[in-house]
Every structure is written in structure tokens, then in C-alpha cells.
Image (cartoon, rainbow, N blue to C red; front, side, top):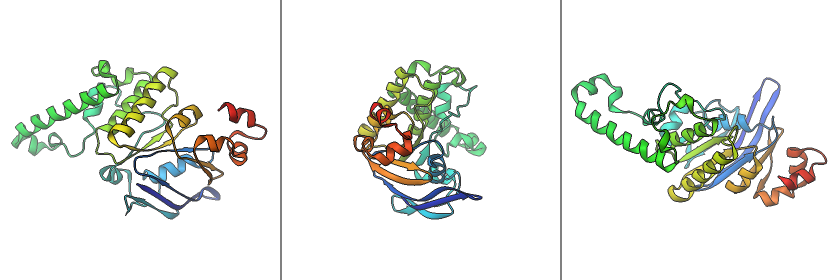
Length: 259
């Protein structure tokens, strides 16, 4: 699905990403882990079109998307969530979802005047889709709640719901577990698994919660000092001395087993 080939990025004299290459296979949930400062977020931002790489190439289903801006990638089916959700706080949960689909007729003044019946029909279809998404995520009871009133975990579910309002081929999840209580984290993990299993969503996930990574992701990529140092399933990576040293620090083998 996504091919990352020898991607590098420097900021002044700091080499944030060093010739990183890996593949996010179609239908997979691929994890990306590493200590703070490893280069994960920079790489994510490059893939998502936030910043361009200095060198290297990214393809989506064989198409070169290197350096394309975020809005262009959205239309190609590559979408992302953020560590800190960006909801429209003074709009309802349902309205937040209804904003997402692109090229709505009601966004054009002339079409609103001349083909108003088509605008109404389209709005009803989008409303039905939004309600289906909310029911899928088991937050239908919040549909008329202002998004700004949601808890951190509920906002993460709303963020996931917005990706479901698109024709996404691949979804980049930036620390979906950050700030989420354990109950809602379980619900969020279940929703990601169901989207992957039942609807064929492909995910790439940055996360610091190793329990969540172990539950969701195979394979898992490990970065340190801007480079990819290991990959595989979590059981294998837990036994990798280089991963223990880079990710958990010296003498942390006991912690690695606990993780």
C-alpha cells in the first residue's frame, strides 16, 4: 500500500530521519515505535504531506506521492489523525462528521440555488452515513453533544470516525492512545481492529503504549536516532537487545519484559 524508500530529512545540522525504508502492506496494522526524539513524528509528517523530505521516495499503491500536500493526499485516500484531536468544539459530534466528505453540493452557492433538491438529498445521505459511523463506534448517544464537551478518549473516537467519512485507503494514527483512559482505549482498539478486519482499512500507528501496539500491530517498526533499527512482531522485538537498549534504555531488560 505505502512504500517508504530511503527517506531522509534534516533541520539545519540535525538529521531527524536517516534513509528510512519500509512497507505498509495492504490490509495491515503496522506499528511505528521508538523513544522520544527517534524521528517518528517527523517521518509521519513527511508521509502525511506536512513537510517534504530532503531525499527519498514515497508511493501509495504504486503512485509517487513524495512531497504532495496534505489536501492532495486526502483526495488520494491517505488520511491521518493527530495526537491532540482537532475537533470543531462548538459544533455537534454529528456535524463534525458531516463536514468531512469532500466536494459537497451545498458548499457551492450556485448549486445551492439551482439544484437545491440535490443538496437536500446529498445532505440526507451524509447524515445517514454520519449516524452509521457513530453507531459503529458506539458513541451514537453523543451525536447531538458539542464536540468540545467530549472527553479525550471520546475525541479520539470522533477523530477515527472522521476518517470513516472519507474514501480512505490508508490511515495514519498518531498516538491514538495518548490521554485515553483504559476503558475507552479498549473501545478504540476494538474499533480499529473491526475497521481493519471488516472493512479492510490499512493503518500505520505511532504509539508509546506497548500493550496497545502488541494488541494491534504486526509488523512493528522500531526507530532510534532517526534510523530504522529493527522490525518484526512484538514478541520478537521484546527479545532484541538493540531495541531494549534504544527504546527502554540501559539495563531495562526487566522493563522490556513487562512491556
